[in-house]
Length: 581
Image (cartoon, rainbow, N blue to C red; front, side, top):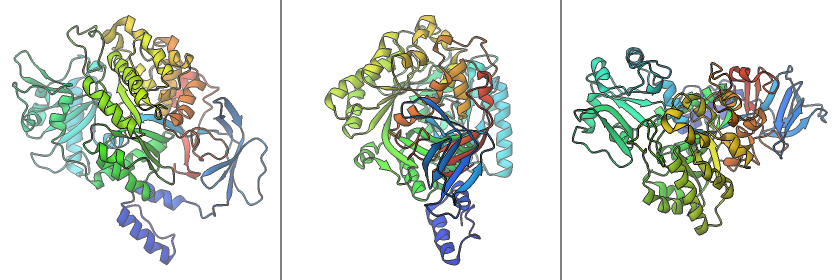
């Protein structure tokens, strides 16, 4: 049997059914634990949680307070201060704690998070040498216990993978080289992803396996960084990463389940009850459906199919996927526009201020956009276009406008993922065409140390422009882009309200005029994130008839000093009317 499937609480007949389900459906330990915690109540049993400091948004997006919430099964039955409570209701004392809707991350990578939790973590390193030290420590530990899903076997072909380095934060802010990896792991291929996943750092072994030499030409939309002698340095950017990534063993179902389990646990612990998975291949498309059928999804997933997947047409032909329990929805496609600002892969209209010979990269060539937009909109799917630079954002808006004339029946709630650096004159076009900017507040506070160097002060006027979007009436879907950033949504709420990092710097906030109010930020992580996934009638607020997704936290984020929001701790997380954390 799979770990976590305990049968002691079930009758003999049900034990057989549960055992078969666990074995045949591959139920994760999180799902099995969820099953064990389910109370033995009928679907008509009502649960009252009283004595809470409750906050939610109403149908108009306005903040309202309450002290009691009544649940039946997976739904909210009533919310208020004076409720009609049946005598047989299960009663729970909220002990005066603050209760809010479960938070929604509108842009993350579920299995990427799970993988990141199980692989070499280079986040926060201050130098290339520190990253190497962190890596060798991970390899020594994983070799001794042989439990890491990021290693395959103990031979010279065993890949070592990791993530999280950011040369911009290093004492010497330059790209690392293959030489430092060769010195410690000369015989095993190594691939370490930059924090934004738009560049990888590899050793000579990996370059050799990929056949990358001084004579190798980078694929369109990618760059093989070379030294003065024309030799590859070990840094591959955007589409050039595929040359190495294609060699990695594909994760099997056991590995995917371990990643899902780790991500489920982590997201529940920080108060995320729903997430939008930004770009999944066909293997994960089918894996998620199997896990949903097995009841193994502890967090709601709104998944975007990767437009680069060779089976895109087949998946579109199958139509929308909607799990009856509401835990999985697949009705959107992620199209990849450009790279990232940190690696100078974001596509800009004018050259980089700190690299006049670079304009960035288009991951999907411009001439291919009409076809892919027609394919997605014509199949009645939502299209979510990754755009960091102002050129990529302009191409996105222009292509949406053109394709909307061909498919007027499908013009609602399409998105630009990141919408990070935009020509000021292009921002009103988002409102004109109803395009949702899906933005990540912590990207601003992570990028503030290099963004002006990359694009200059003038272009900064249209960058990370949350308040500008809100003032024109756009609805912003907020997220984190985990594991690029930490998944904790309270970090995002703090960044949105203060425009400060974890150390409360800069004191007045970075480009402070783009700060938002806490109510606006809260809406971006709840109602408007749900709206961006066509789920606002089911989740995002605690209204009568909606799903009972909520969290209990250790402080009143609406009354405390904004600099304390970031440290909020989650005490309980409820999904579908059941306590999951």
